[in-house]
Each structure stands twice: as structure tokens, then as C-alpha cells.
Amino acid sequence: MSRTCIFTGKRPHVANKVSHSNIKTKKRQLPNLQQRKLWWTEGNRFVNIRLSTSALRTATLKGLEAYATEVGIDLSQF
Image 1 (cartoon, rainbow, N blue to C red):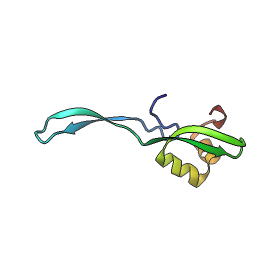
Image 2 (cartoon, helix red, strand yellow):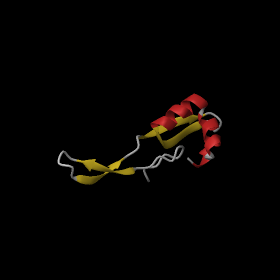
Image 3 (cartoon, one colour):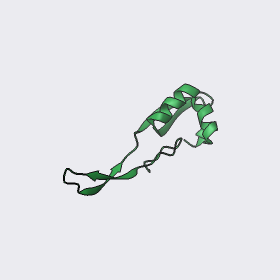
């Protein structure tokens, strides 16, 4: 499974790690993804989703079904 949020599309980024002597090496900046089991009221069951913390906050604020339809995700696949 890739490290990508299905709601926001956040992915790992590549950046430079700069030492004190100005030597640059590549590093990966990973998104803050969480594996969560959320209750889907319309489906009357739990849904296992890997999503970012910002998407988790938005899903609790708007509701899981409303946020999924806004983004264009079918929750019955999960």
C-alpha cells in the first residue's frame, strides 16, 4: 500500500538535509498518515481507511459520507 492519503492526495516529498558544513543529502518527508477504523453510518459498518490527520479532522467535522462524496470516493470499496 502506498503512503498516500486517499482524501487529500498527500504523498512523500523529497527534500535536502543540510549539514552544518553545508553538505546536502536527500531525505524523504513522509505525510502524517493514520490507519483508522471509522464508523460509516450510511453503510451501517466500520470502514478501514488510511488517511492523513488533516483529512481525519475534516471527516469528523463534515461527516465521513459528506466528505467522501465531496472528494469523489466510494466508501463501499473499503
